[in-house]
Image (tube, rainbow, N blue to C red; front, side, top):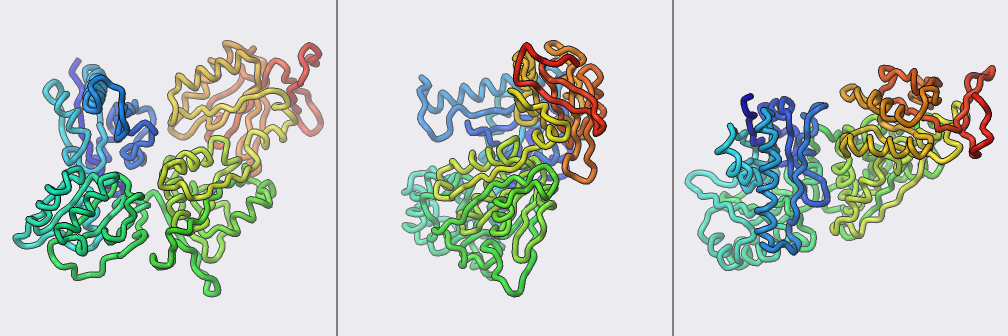
Length: 534
């Protein structure tokens, strides 16, 4: 069997539309997609590539053991990192040796301050390897400025912010133009070097270039305590001939985030749509994570309705945003359903600059929805002063249960069949444990257009613990215009009847069904030993 091929895929600086056609094709074709992240688990590379992934691909999540924190590894920081790269290379080598194609994702360009080079050194001599270049953050930041970095015979110097201040100062004095990368904690020293070299007045700071969170500021105006790693300082060579933004967000939105504003002549525009200097960065707004309920507008609580009316901005999955009536002057930031962390960060960033943001979920925001994603990102130091509230909503499990009676009348569990954020082995283990504990189960996210096999696999796991006659409720689009509810049994459950808009309720040993003129009724008794016969 021939070995597989390693592709080093440059993804560009952040906007999924800046991924090259070749990179997008290779990501979709790869057997294995590998990507890095810090311990928090949120991979920028995977988020950029998400629109190009396909169902059934193997994902290798390579988690750094240490980034900037200390380590008790006997070899220190370098020892821990070297050991990680060796182990990561061994994981990818296993796939390559088995004949699988591996796409290793890299933000920006794979050979420009990228972790990909460490894998390339360890694997390219043993396996076929090819690199797909990507747009670098330098190019994206220059585009954000809207002015050339160099022209004619001018020289551009790319410098790491980790250099000693004295050396950085000297190099800035000697070059026509500069791009300073690796900022974060190094920014105070970088600004000192810019000042000492006489270049501070002409320097600009670009944060998260090309993303929904892009900011452009004069380098002298940057808060040193609020500089992320994914930022860059530029010193253009030629004198700018166009106006460069002084502060605030660029307003750019990539393809997977659509922003619309309904104007109102008699009301001020929301903070995010006003000129940047009118957003008061030191007076944060608020993020409210709300649940609309499963479909029927009557199931949306008055508290949620009030929060929606007060919001300057709505953030959420397109399908859910579309359920909220448009309101004059309110901005609507709609995206697909695979960018939870990015949506959360966008909402928090807008609130940090004064907006009142409602993050919209269907059902209850705390049940397989946006509340956890928002709170996770809000724990980052840069958002410590942004208030976050969660307003509950009627969840789909309770809505479906109400249509047939009380199948969740006793102890029950909620389990998502989606293996996008957790491996299927974990899903199967939880299904088995709950089934063995004789609890009713509400199954969320059972299937999608590309994820079809999980319902059948779930059925086989449950039949190891439950008899075939166990009641099963299938509720689809409950509260919506195409609502349907049907009661069947575990043995007769047909996976082809289930899609992403369906919720399943699997009964326990005390779950009983009986027929009425209104249809089949289902309840789960709270007592053992006195259950009516079925």
